[in-house]
Figure 1 (spheres, rainbow, N blue to C red):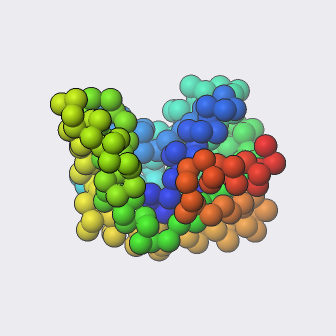
Figure 2 (figure 1 turned 120 degrees about the vertical axis):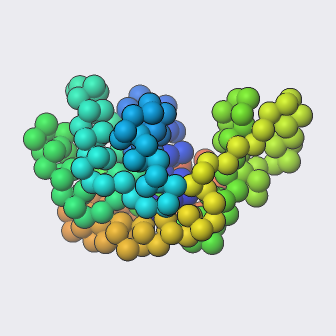
Figure 3 (figure 1 turned 45 degrees about the vertical axis):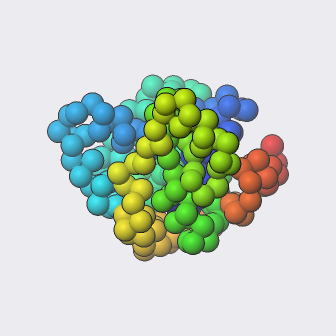
Length: 208
């Protein structure tokens, strides 16, 4: 867990690749629903474009479906749950299928860095690579542009939407810190450094 832009998805992907676990990203599941063009996808798109959180019921249904496809394999939940209600529903679901959480990892990053990470985030239209106009090297940005690509910005990565998402996180998600601390599942890692440095700190906390 962590605020938008804290690096949850990046760190989850690194763990997934090294330890062969399935990554369950609610962001990916929601974007897939949008791309499907379904009524649900259109509803999700409107909610996300306003910087608000998708309802608990919608997200939990997506998680249930993904877990059923995984079977007995391990998994990483990326950015879910986001509030106490979801945390309790997830706990009930995982107990039912005998897949309790081993850890809940909090990635701490100051708000001013989060805003730059998100407002500066771009995707190369040619390679799909994620770049950042503030943090990526000029050579990385030029490589995409010089080959005829475009640096695309997600609709919900405008500054007003980002500030709203951080405010929603502080109001709804931060209370889960005490919830998981009391369950003795919470680990905290500083997410300000380079990706690989944060990853090493995360693995050390998990004793991997």
